[in-house]
Image 1 (tube, rainbow, N blue to C red):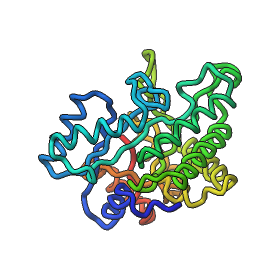
Image 2: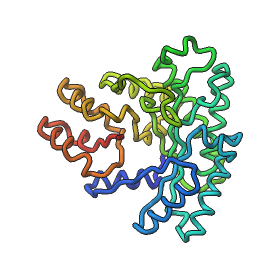
Image 3: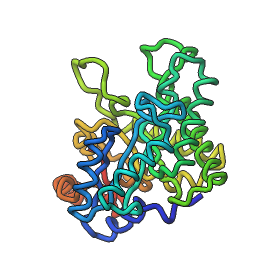
Image 4: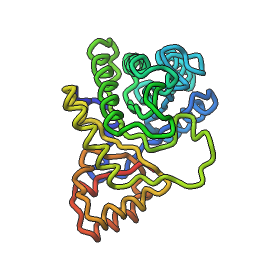
Length: 290
């Protein structure tokens, strides 16, 4: 199902037309943080994007004690008390997947993850980050990352659950916009100090896109793939990765469906560099996650 009425896609279209537009994602369930975000958005006449992570809010309540539906109403109630219009609020779900059920076997964990995604979509959340990178108890050595092909397959299964929820939901807040990619800190942040930073390689990015696209096709999710317009990767050294892609000649067209809204100023140096390399116009429309 094409998310033609999704506010984020509308912003992307404006960005691609040359307008310096962007949106800030407020990923918090804290009352005071959300209140400050609403006040700021009202003062600056902005659309407000608020996200809940899979450990904060789930179908069982998460650590906040709220389901997606309850979280939505708590946000909207706060916004109403501050005279901020409901239609200017976008709700998102971050790291939606089996994160909370890693101590269960994969079949059970994935089913609960599908129910989680369905609950978010049914409640009217429209920015949906699908993250199936977590290992379950039957997935082997916990110190070895899950195979990318398994992650892609599970990601597609989660997306299928989301699309089915769209059709059965009575919510009219908009159709989902999907985010893939997992090479970022886990929900809640890293659990230990790291001696070094894993840099997402250009090859890793290409593999993620290729495998996920194939998995979406397998589950008849081509339309959902067409609005999977964001890819998450390691932020700390992402400019180095971009430069690596340019210098090694990897086809920039692999990014053609993955646009990220971000202030144009922060991309100026990168865009100038890309232009000097005479990369294609579609590549110039690619905006990255920092």
